[in-house]
Image (cartoon, rainbow, N blue to C red; front, top):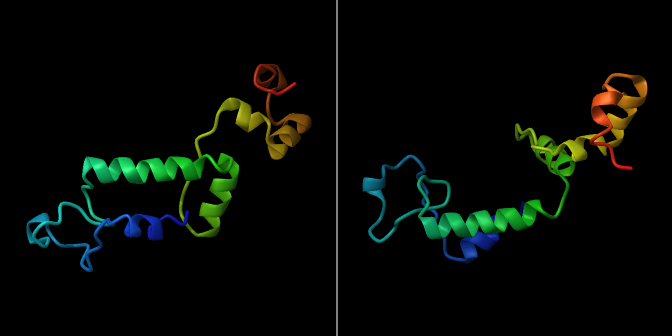
Amino acid sequence: MELLDEVLEAGLPELEDWYRSTKEWPEGVECALGLYPLTKNWADYVSGLMKEKFLEKRSFEWEKLFAEANVPVAAHRTSQEWFSDKEITEMLDAGVVSESWSKQYLPD
């Protein structure tokens, strides 16, 4: 998603050892990249960046990009999104998906 540089430039700390206990974090570090928990401010910031990025592509596109990067993922889709996909409409034409059920979701 190309957000790493942006988050680091914004000042989110990065620790070398991700397996450190929070008790072993350097003084003044309340959270760090890759470690749980993030503070509410950082969680809100990162979530906002991710939301903006996710809105740039359809769920099918994100699913394909993540799969190409070997990230196990299954996108959440609306019914309209499912039935507007070319592969799904081909299955409809082949009778694999019930047309009577799907008519309410198909775009005109």
